Image (cartoon, rainbow, N blue to C red; front, side):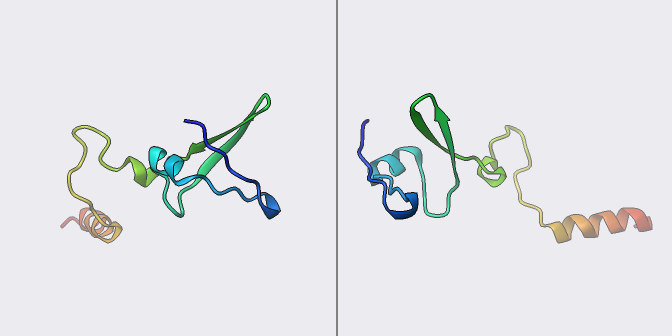
Length: 79
């Protein structure tokens, strides 16, 4: 898939929607930009919450920090 994008003022580039859809980029996502020889490589950057649910056999329910903290307090107080 070859697409053309124009470099605008201050180096801004708008990625074509077909490219964004293909890699699943949404507004606010981070990308990693690398220079390899004479090419610019742009990759979608994985964030920790993008990995949620990717570990087989991992916890099925989400636990809040407050719940974890309360459980730790119970353990320390012997309750």
